[in-house]
Amino acid sequence: MHIVLLVLFMVAGNTVWAQFSEGHRLYLNKQIRYVNESIHGMLVAHRLVEGYNQEINKYVDLPSYKVNDFDNSDLPADLFGETKQWFYEKPPNKLYNELLVDARRTQFPLQSWPLISQLRNITKFVNNERITLGSTLSQERLNQLATIQKVFLGLESMASYYEEFNAHVEALEKALLQPYHDISTLDPTRKQVYTALVEMHYDIKAALRFIKKDNRSSITQILSKIEKERNWLRTCINELASEDEKKQLSGISLKLEEIFSVMTSYARGITTPDEYSMYGPGYYTFNVAILTLTNRYGNGYISEINAFFEENNWRVIHFLEEAHFVKVIYPEKIPREAVYKESSVAPPEIKTPDLIKESSLPEPVQKELSIIVEKPPPPLSVIGSYSFKVDSVDFEVELFDHRIEDGDLISINVNGEWVFENISLEKESKSLKLKADPGSEHYILIRADNEGWRPPNTIGVRYISNGVVKNFFLVRDLKAFQAIEIKYSL
Image (cartoon, rainbow, N blue to C red):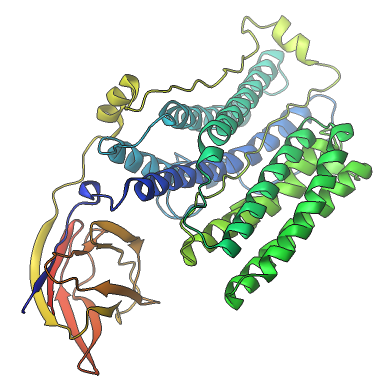
């Protein structure tokens, strides 16, 4: 029986999820990725805020320390939308717009939308305020009380934005992510490891929040719990069948050990560097000593764990990073009360994040979709078609690109699910393990994701038929949202 299996290309938004739970997991992980990338942008703004605070204080009566070597002139107009990959694998704004497009097509619960939408709004405020503060400091007279008040009011606004951002991240974590740490798809040994990682991760976060409040008395008990969990994690890792997974997780566990060590030092009375002496040990330990070991910008364990899950196909919910917080330092001559006493502006208030229970997209978000997503992705056009035959139900296809590196990005979809998105084949090929199920249609989707590839754009296809390795090449000058149709038959 001769069966032709069609390989079709389509827009990602039209993907039909193979199963509801898997689609929901992927969507939640994309939201997590958006939040984690936003946290990275908040870090850059945080470094600016520290510098602004030091700059204004040196005009009053406090010493000034240089805590970073950049300012607004070195940064893009939108910290959260830059496209040169200075800070991100993918900018938060781009991820957010993708989430909005996807939200119109999902069938699973969307309780997280009010939180995600508010996080997006806060990043807008933070970006605008860091520009305003920088402009004030560079253009106005800093020895005048009105200017000093203006700067401190801006710093307080930043502090409130960060507190609100953190509150929304914590609400997203507690109400929406922890219940979805579903491990039913894992084998028993992986399940043990994942459970140990989840419990240790959330206890590290709980300890971090005590440190943020500079509450040493409450951290001892939770450190005792983390110590037991790290011992259990070691045992669970050793029981894994894969030596590669053992090696990877053992490396990650070393960072968890280091975090535990820093927290223990804090509990015993950590020494704060001079440049952070006025901020206090809690601020320094949280924002500097520990977040460099948790968040991606410092090659922290969270990004490594999430990458590990993806690389080894654990199909679980990823982990959220922890955002920085802002502490405004006032000189003795102008205390906080004096700034607000002389100003008509009231101190900022922190809003409590709201959750909704409806399973459909909230009306405010529905309106926002049409505002933020200015142009929906154009229809995908198929500009070429190729065919080949295989002699086995189960087979493997390798896609590769031997051309010079020039930033070509593609996405690959198999049977209605995007298995690789915005990837390059220039340094590393991608293998697809496929099944030719008689009587059914199958789809492999390869889509051009960036505009104007340098011609000729050559993608190689390698497969085995009758015991012989065969290659053919697809040569096309692709533009974004164009694709090639490949047909393979059994």
